Length: 625
Image (cartoon, rainbow, N blue to C red; front, side, top):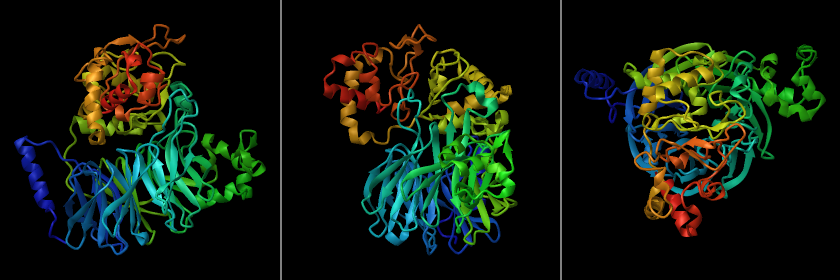
């Protein structure tokens, strides 16, 4: 297996030459997904930042080459015979089809924009891609090598799993859709009918659910397991030391009725299991493995035991354990099935049952997971370490570490990115910066921070263009990025960061680059007309002038509250507005149309005097920025 591969020794030499010349930015190795060949001899890892799919020989523990996939490789899957690897190529809006015998990308299949994950249904000649760019799932006909249909889902699908009978596809939607003023705001899971190629049902997760990143289906097809954050956004950030700001859960969905059975917390009383990412299930359906990107761990959940407890089968030794002076949650559920929803608020349930344990992932920032074909080993993609951890599946004991390639020393931006995603830089590891700002953007929830009092929650702001758009936060209480980062860590994480760490965080924020709306070609004509409306009749450019589409000032936006009677809020940039809903300081506008029509009034340009066509064009322009 040499033809079509770049020499690893050559890659190292090239990196050294680039460093010596000082002409090229460092190339970091960042494995984000892994898959094991059916014969168990090789493993493939998607290296998102280097733009390669790395092939590793599992007997020697060494990489044997790399296949160029420059469109930012993400999720991947092996065919049943091991001859083909399918790779989601996010920036290419395609699936790269790798011929393993020839070690080349044999073809590309166009799908929806920003595909990040794949679900393979090979017996049906189907492949499903999660397209975050247009909130859809592409149904691909593998025999014809083309997209059959694009199915709309909720918002930014991040992962999918196919039921064993190939009849349904369970899709994890990353973020919630709705107004921030909705006290029950939560993300949803889409269930697709494979035959009809349509969304069959939506299952709402508990209030505050967001950053839904992983889903697995039990071998019998009865259950789906979904990993996500559970944000307590209706409480002030002052509750961090009690564990009631961010918690993290695995939700159990009953696929026979498409309903939520329950959500069980993965944390414990003294610390969070921040930022769950991927989930896999054992062949017998009795065990789950979940990676935690924020705490650099893998949780091992005895889900078979959990199902027995949910059925009321509580062992005597567990029944004797008390929750203070009352029966523990499992005994109470046995007595009253209606209490099963209380598991979403119980930090001790899995631990008192002996149904969970954590193990180090063998590196920093674990993302993707893959089980060996015999179920004996677990492989973990450690994003920031540039390695794949090898764990004993049953115990979590580390057996080894596989380096995907030479790793360049981290510069300030990379160090800042690592800190940003590191929940160990928080009191009791309850969250990382990325818990509220996935991808440096938004989680779709409002949060009640200390900087402007208590009882006035604010919608999360994207960090894109942060250095160019001071002052910061909705009330403009922080004059520059450094002060915003420093006080943000102190107030939100309850620790005092080192000055060098603050500098690195600012460097990371400065490295975030706006991405054009990938759907712009479909409405470019309307956006061009809308630009004239924006700058002319609607007079939006007065407060939102190019190039950053903010005047960096505060304005009365027509919303007055007892805590903020002046009604003045910082003018946000409109760059990437297409991906930062909801809108306004408290997120009251679920859509841009709501922002301009339902809540806009006369304080947001002359939108009341626009014709319906002009309003449509104006919205198209704003969402094109």
